[in-house]
Image (cartoon, rainbow, N blue to C red; front, top):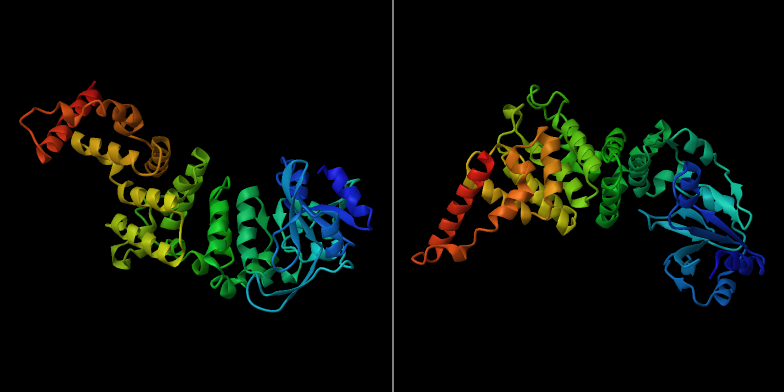
Length: 408
């Protein structure tokens, strides 16, 4: 169905249609808008279903439908009011009667940059809470005092700061802080969803810095919070503690690759430093081993994507030794391990480069060297060799070949 026909059908029975949310915000930002979300007012649910029998109901607590509009799956929600009646994002009483106005619907939304609408078909701009001003000033402000009633809104505000490079105003940070107790009890899938989107942002560090500012980091990501105050040798890390270092690395990797697993691996590459005993500081001996243990504990608390875990385990174990190897056999072993790490060579290398500042030749040429090493096969071993002896011969041959290539 065409958008024009959809709007005409709703208006023919006395209703109105609005474009809302991110599409409106991004249009004002000069960014290509993505999915369209629509809100209808002045309409009974039964009337809507009679008009659009093809619409699929996807909302549980209140009417939200999905339809193909201009060939794109689009969500259509009824304007609603909300009243806090329980805990978390499900703890709301909802009123979606035909008398609910667009202004009331926008009022119950999280931030002012998301509380704007266009009235169709003439694209009349509706902005009762000065969302346009916040877009212009690149700031995130809660629409109302109801912000803290859904604790995940705190994560969403931090994530939007990372996605758009916006700042969060002080009053909204204070409301985020109020979310701590409920946020710790939220379904982990919602937290992982926001983490995934934050890692996809141009500057993921803004997400964690905003949570730290709102005193939420310890409640949501205690493994990252534990890096704060863990000092490092100043000659190697003038940027400060392990948290500051981690924020630098995750942003550097985000500039180099869009791969979610690589960005997550960068986030947790030094996670073991959060468990370094005070008496050992500023050194962090063995943090590679402890880091894998911390990662497994995080995953047991909050199930993480398997691709993230595979890549992160490898990076945690190898990030210190990978650029420092001297023996050709160990270098060859590492190159084959990278291939099975869940990361591409470029993604692994961008993490090591960000962490160490440069790459040795055997890593910068790693993909090329690996291709040459593959040409040496166990089938070429001397006939007298069997079993483990073939593997030993193969490793030695590849080591000799690699040594020759690196010295050329």
